[in-house]
Length: 107
Image (cartoon, rainbow, N blue to C red):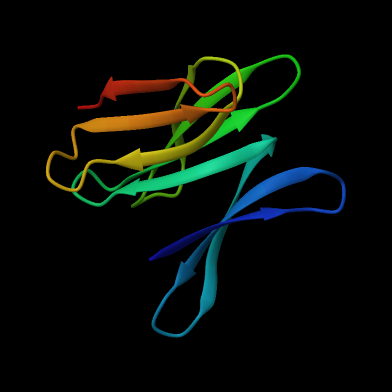
């Protein structure tokens, strides 16, 4: 699967789930305004999406099998980029616009 954030004309953002074999969109998941970063934990089949707006900053956790949002967690202000360690996928790295970094243990 391929996951792409699509900003819509009204400013909202969707996560498109794409079949990489035939390039068809299998699902579209609304993820609110201000989606900035996306990373997939292939071992756990979880997609993480960072969102930042003027009133909140969240991390969405999306089940890769069902394409459903399974959790929303508050994070520091202005999350931009996300990364999963290639060797230890139990760590999620969040980079913020102010130059700081968070490392979260995900299980």
